[in-house]
Image (tube, rainbow, N blue to C red; front, side, top):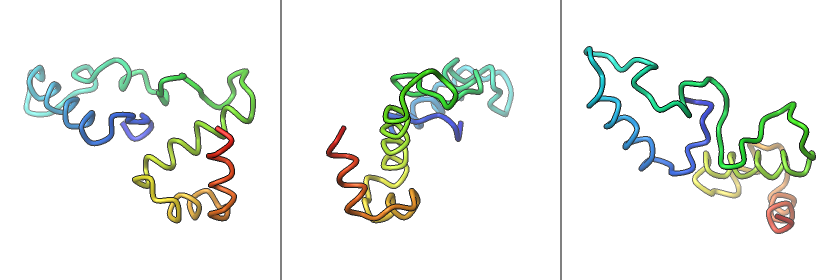
Length: 97
C-alpha cells in the first residue's frame, strides 16, 4: 500500500479501506480483500511508469516529482527538500511538464 501512488489521496484510501472491510471474511483485512492495483506488489500510477521500464529519464523524473508533491500535500518547500533540490529548480522542473 505504501508503494501505490494514491492519485485520489485520502479519499481514495478511505474508499479502498471501506470496501475491504465490507468484503473481508475475518477480523483482519487480507491482501486478497484489496483491489488488484494494490495487491500486485508494484508501484502504480496512471501511466504505469516504473524504474527500469524503457521510458525517458524526463518521464521518470516528472512522475517522481508528481508523486513527491502528492506525498508532501503540494508543499513546494517540503518537496524540494525531499528531492534534494532547490525550490526554484523544482518550480522550473514543474513548469517544464
